[in-house]
Image 1: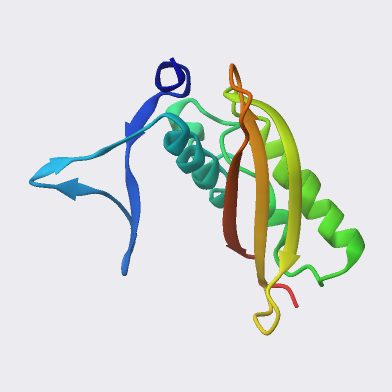
Image 2: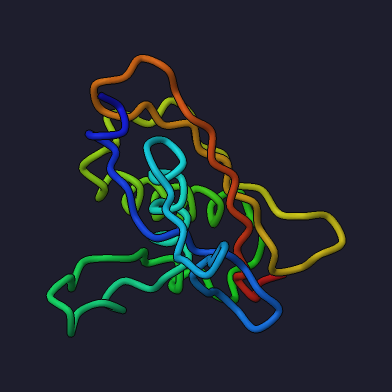
Length: 138
């Protein structure tokens, strides 16, 4: 049941040249269920809102681009949390956000880690998502 609700999609992987579709044994691979939701949320957070506008998905993505260059302050981290919350809740498969934390990596200015625990719809067990983002801030 979970797989039906959370769906499936082509698996996207990181390569030295950026993102690409995963191929095994000459065929494209799929991601399903909870893993698919993690991939979908990660991609949504890493893409600017409007990136798929020409394909009819003008609200897809996040507004995290607004955080580029922000200095690491408590107020700015709250802004980041709000932008993450907004993007995550756009996915109709997310029932609720159980926890959300944003923090910078010490010694890596402009790099933040987003940790989100979401409970998918029709489920009781949260799934954890950790996404590293580059904001260019200090």
